[in-house]
Length: 261
Image (cartoon, rainbow, N blue to C red; front, side, top):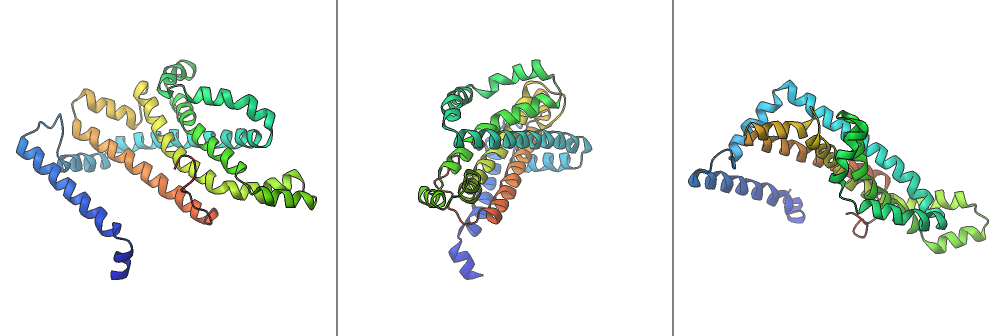
């Protein structure tokens, strides 16, 4: 146990820093007598969080946001795989398509939300499209870079032995791209959650984003913070799941050089 703590000091430091920050926050708010509507204490946020957990309405809205983010993430990943494969394998496609993709990425995604609402309405479809749009590009770029990172010497050797283009793609390029792919997924799932919430902010009658707006209108600041904590926990949970899959299917690679990490 002591050896484990010595090798991984963050196991001890992370909870200690968290407790200290919470204590300092609580103390300063009480001493300075800051109004709850401006900045609530951690204890009040905790009470609001527990209250939400006991409320069926909260879970219904949490599920709505989760579905929007997951569907958006799925479609972003699907289209990124298709587009990324063609772009990385066919030069003319890369030269033709990439300028448009980069130009589209330069558009502030929040500005697209009103357009999506006009096209798809105030329902969940516009939120799914928003989530997919925001998550798409980081996944795409990592797939393209991953497929291009394959060892050129191995590719030449396989060609000498008569390997087909598909065999090279499956045996060399796909394994090389896996760490990049999961790094893109790691970023993409977080952006999908962000996209779903942004869509809910701009036009929705349900979801955690809508709950934040309702809390704002009612000056329920502790509830706003509680919902933000839930969104943060959703992101952490999604990150852990993606990393777990990465360790299983792409355990051999160092991610420090990968786009988006």
